[in-house]
Image (cartoon, rainbow, N blue to C red):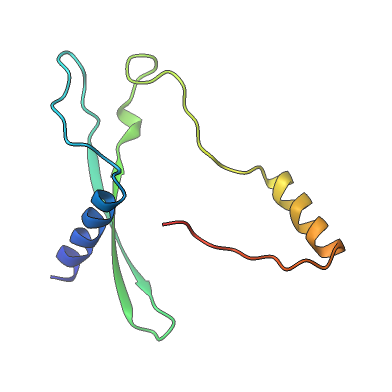
Length: 100
């Protein structure tokens, strides 16, 4: 039952964030599959937290039939080092957060 609840939490999150729109697949196009990844994490109090994540099976995509350009908004390591060094020199407070 815990995995079922974790899966529902993930689906609700994807729906609320408008991650997808249900549609009919175009004719003569391949649909990329998906699968569930399940993981048990530990809360600070030692309690188990059951997490479910839906992932696309991107390895099934073929260039250029399924995609042309790819982009991932990831910062370069050098940029992070420069920012942290500058913050240290200027005695600035550095904060970290996760966008959900």
